[in-house]
Structure formats: structure tokens, C-alpha cells
Image (cartoon, rainbow, N blue to C red; front, side):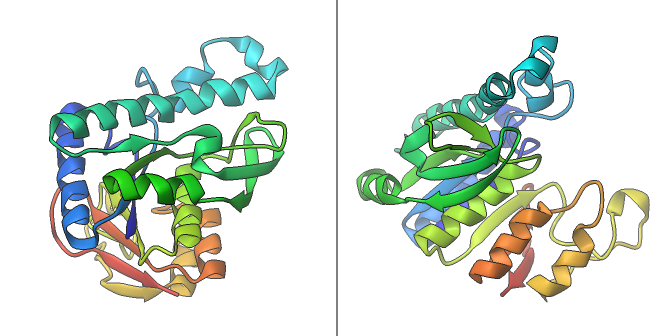
Length: 243
């Protein structure tokens, strides 16, 4: 089985989600079981983005627990929409969230750490449908409260699940064709790398817009999980990042 992670750009509208569904179908054909981790729809001022949800009231500064609960809703909405559109496309699936997802967290609201992953319900659900959707960016603390795990945390969710489920690899779908030698927005000389080690990737993540969250990449290095970064818009080969 594999884990596939789709970010906010991939989830932004029904047309791009159709492309996501095509990749999920391909994953099911090739690997039989697919766990899909999603980010909130869109970015910045988009209606259901995390930033927009956190601006619903200034009072969130007084309750980090309430702030985290509101922030987690973006991924829940994205999961519900993708689940319905997968069913529309003839792909049976199940959403697991909260305690069902088995991601346990500790630390501070807004920047929690993953303390444990219990994939029992995911494994049971995969026997029923082969496709399970997990809202990224969040877990449950020891008191049963929703806790988010930092900006870009859906990457960490995907990699943590990949490790717990012993997935063959974790796929990341991006608006670039793979890991590039430099940021393609700031020059035409950026080239895609076909393969690299996780140690070679880490220095490239010291930017404002890393291709993968650095904390997630460090987790992948510690757990020896292969990663595959590829473009959302085509079937062009991406970049393998090997332990």
C-alpha cells in the first residue's frame, strides 16, 4: 500500500480534484490500498483555507484549543468533499478523523508533536474499501482535544502514517514536477532531480516555501521512509527521495 498526500493547491476546485482522483485510481490499481492525506482547500484568502478560518474571530488569541479546533476544520471539509467526489467517480472510500485516525499528539496547541500513531482502524477500514481519507495537520492529545501540528503539518501526517502502516512509500503531489535545484519562480535555470537521498534534500528545505515540511523530512529520515515528489498535473516521473 501507499500513502498519497494532496495539498491545498491540488484540492482547490473540482477540476483539480478530478486530477487527484485520477492519481488515487492509479494508486489503487498499482498498490491495492491507498491512504489519502489532504490539506485544507486553497491558501491565503481562499474561503476554507487555514489562514481564513483563523481570522474568523480575534478571540482565538485567548484560546489556543479553540483556535486549533477551528483550524482543523479546513482539512475536515476537504476530506468530506474529496470523499463524496470519489464516490461520484465510483471509488468506495472511508474518512477517518480524530481518534479514528490514530494520530496522537502532545506539546502545545498550534505546534504539537506526534507522540504515537495507532493505525488499527485504518488497517481495518482498508480491508473494506481499499481507500481511506485522513485529514492532515492534526491529531488528538491525551485529553481528547484536537491539536494541530504546525504549518505544513499535513506532510508530517502523511509520513507518520506511512511509517506506522509500513507503506512502500509516501507520494507528494505538488505544483512542480519534483524536487528542483532551485525555486522555479525565481529563475528559469531550475532543473528537476530524478533521485536523491534524504540527507541531500534537507538543505533544500531552508526556504519560505519548502517542497516538503522540514520536520516531516526529518521524521522520514529517522524512520527510513522512501518519499516520491511528483507534479499534480501530469504523469511525468518525479523525484525519489531515498533513506
